[in-house]
Image 1 (cartoon, rainbow over the protein chains, first blue to last red):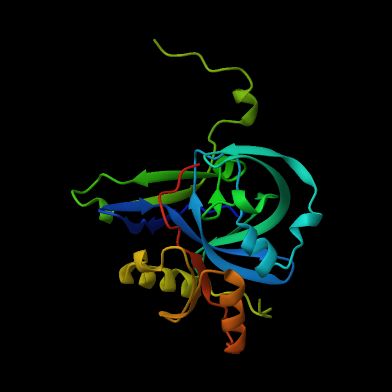
Image 2: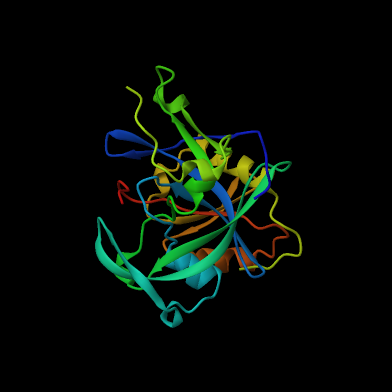
Amino acid sequence: MFFLSKSFSYSFTPIQIREEIILRPVLQVVLMYKSVEFPTGVLIDSGADYSIIQREIVEDAFNIDISKLEKCGETCGITGKTDVGKIDIEMRFGTGHDTLIEKIPFRVSLDKKKDPPITLLGRDPFFYKYRVDFRMGYTNDPALGKFVLYPETHKRKANNFKKPLKYKK
Amino acid sequence: MKKLQKNVNQNQLNSDYEWLLLQGISQYKGQWIAVLDRNIIARNKLLKNVLKTVANKNLDKIPLYLRVPEGSVTT
């Protein structure tokens, strides 16, 4: 990761579902595998333990045979339990001047019926490296909200985090 | 998927996405769309069909690809 002190802010992606407008934190990224680049949007998902990529991107954009991927575990979501494989993909995001690249170990469902509707960017490892602010209520119009990414910086040395912190009374 | 010597321009990607948000993406629910230079150049329910359409256009840039989920997303 390149160190940057600046932040990156993004608009939420609004979508109408029946009568309701849903705002989604979708990050514009370029997924890179070998020499193929695939610009797309990924949903920032702090509730997901790790990242999950859509099968179509793996198969049709990156030309990877999912049936040959080794099972690396199973995941349990709203659609039920499924076996997953793992594939390391580089992800680029930011602006033209400040571009960040991270290697993300994406999981991919080995079951065609258990594919996520959008690629999810989960906590491990992204949230260990970036702080994500959701600013949804700072105006009267929720559509004017934004989410902001900051490269994580620690003022305290890592050694000081070994012991659990005591609560202040 | 077209292989380019040059990287995708990040500013172009961000600009196309911002444009897309202003158009409203609800009409494309359940579909993959390809966006380039503030135009939707292909759309289909299957990504492979969108990739094929884009490949036939012999473009010198890679478009943004996005699938618009049909319903609510929960994990």
